Structure formats: C-alpha cells, structure tokens
Length: 329
Image (cartoon, rainbow, N blue to C red; front, side, top):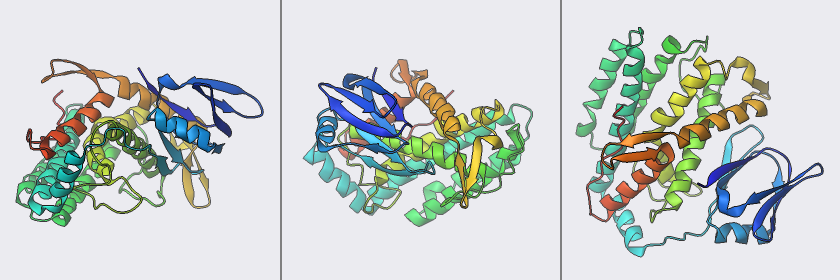
C-alpha cells in the first residue's frame, strides 16, 4: 500500500534512477517511488524540473507547509484521469443553483450529523451535553428550508459554535477554548485544529486527484483562484470523524499539551516534535478500517474519502443521487 512521506529536514529532493532521494550534508535517504502516495514538506527543500517531471509521471502530489506549520500550497500533477463529460457536468451542477444547493446541503447535513454523533458519544460518558445536542438538532432541522448558500453556511457556523463550546467539558486538560479563530490562531487549541484540518484538506485533495472530479469546482465554498475549493467541501464531512476525534484522543492521552507549542512573533506554533507525533497518529487513523455496511467489507478511513469522491461523481453524471457520509458506529 502506498503511503505518505513527511519531510522535516532541510535538503534537496532529487530523482535518482527510478527512486526519489532526499539529501543534505548529513545523510541521504532513498524513497522507492512506487511506495509514495503523497509527500508533505515541512523543511526547506529544493528540487529541479527533472524531479517535477518524475512526480508528474508517477501522479504524486506534494503539499507544502511554511515555517509556522501553516499549509502553503500543493504541487498538483497534471490530471491523469481527465473526463470532459464529468468536467462539463460538474460545472453545470455548480452553475445550476438548485443543483449546487442540493449538494451543498448534503455536505452540511452529513458534517453536522457527524458532529452530533461525536457529542452523543461523550454524552454517554457522564458528561451532560443534552442541551447542546438538542440545540444542534434544532439547527439541523432548518437545513432543508434554506434557500441560499450564505444561509446554509450561517447555520453551519452556529452548529460549530455550539460544538466548540462543549470541548472544555470532555477534554481532560485545561484548554480554555471558547471559539474558533484563524489567521493566525490565537491560542494553542486553535493552532492544533488548523494544523489537523490542513491535513484533512490535503488528504482529500490527493484522493480527489485519483478521480475524474475537478478540485476547483465546488458547491459549498466559492470557487476562486489559487485554491482547490472542492477539497474544502468534502473535508467538512471528515473533519469531525477523523480530525476532531484525533484531537480529542491526542489531548485526553496528554500526547499533545500546552507544552507542545511555542510562541513566536504573535504566532502559536507546534514544535516539530509535536508535529511528528500528530502525523504518526494521523497516518495510523487513515489506515484504520471499518466494516462498510453497504460494501460489506473492511475499508480504511482514507478509502472512505475516495469513496465519497466517487459518490459525488456518480451524482454529477446522474447515475445515483449523492448522500453524504454519515457515521453509523
């Protein structure tokens, strides 16, 4: 099975015969190209056109993070699974407002269901979250009545506001977390969420690449230059299931604490050692399998994301109505 590689050291990434090699003054490490699904670059890495062509040929995406650990962008190889039919119908589904709204609602309905499921799990563990769960369900009941993307995102924002307000109750650390803040995150929990959300986003982008979907044509978020907005859309569904549950686990096991961060120039950033802990756990989580009730076989969390892309593609070509993924266990 192909896997992700995380590069923290500074150096040069090169092609050597039919392998990749990462070199610096101290060491050289070979990476068999057939083993690579995607590459995350956290250090200062230089490479040449010979390498980029090699990455193109092998359909390998590369995601870059800046010094502060924030996602900067991706090297996205030329589409290898081009489909003019899917591209046109995806564009039509975006331009037809009713079609766009239908898909966007499905993203938020599924994401909010998965959020509610997380809270019900902790509610069973002697933390009383009945009021918050009820408030979220009331908001979810309004989703089918919205008539605009803005209204939909407004409800989604209110659901997340309630959701985040509960974290102080079931995380076994004094996190003092009250609201989501970005650009830059104002405290260490926000910094942690931003980092893990960027991992969900980039993983989703890599999975989209292996389908016929165009990652720049979205339905919930507005398409704009220099971003893969469909990845933002699909990520919403998996943030509660993969990202948030990983955060709860890391914090409740004290694998990540306030000491895992440093403050620099108004930025609160993860130490490299902490990023490595998170990336290891994130990788393990993506490999975890569940018994898929429709496919009747075990599939990994990473595969669930790919399947979500396939479901959306089938909806776009009018083969089968799209239903967003909702956790059942």
